[in-house]
Image (cartoon, rainbow, N blue to C red; front, side):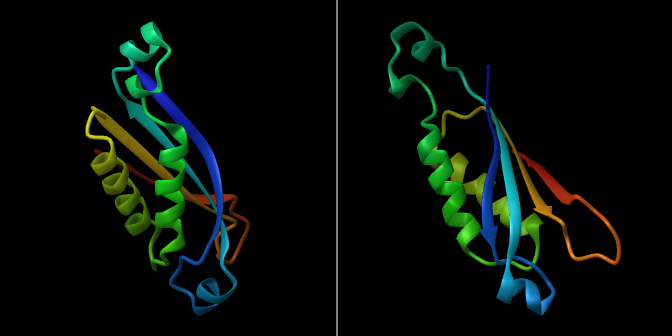
Length: 115
C-alpha cells in the first residue's frame, strides 16, 4: 500500500552559491510511503494511517534549515519522517530545486533518497 504526498512547495535558502543563501529559491518535495493502512480503510480512523499534516510539518521544518546540498536536505527529511512514523515500511523522498542557477535553462534538479 502506498501514500503519495506530491509537490509540497517551499521557499528555502539551500545552495552552495552565496546568493542562494540570501535570496533563496523555490523547491518541491514529494514523498512516497509504503505503509499498511488496512486499519484506516476498515475503521475510518486516522490512527490507522499516516497523518499528512504531520508529514508536511516535518518536511517544512527540515526545509527551514539551510544546507549547501539538497542531498543533505533529502536525507534529513527521510530520517525525520521515519523516526516519527516507525510503521513506515519503505520511504522515497524527492527534493527538487526549481530553476537551479546554471548557465542555461533547466527546469529543476532533483535528488531521490530511499529508506
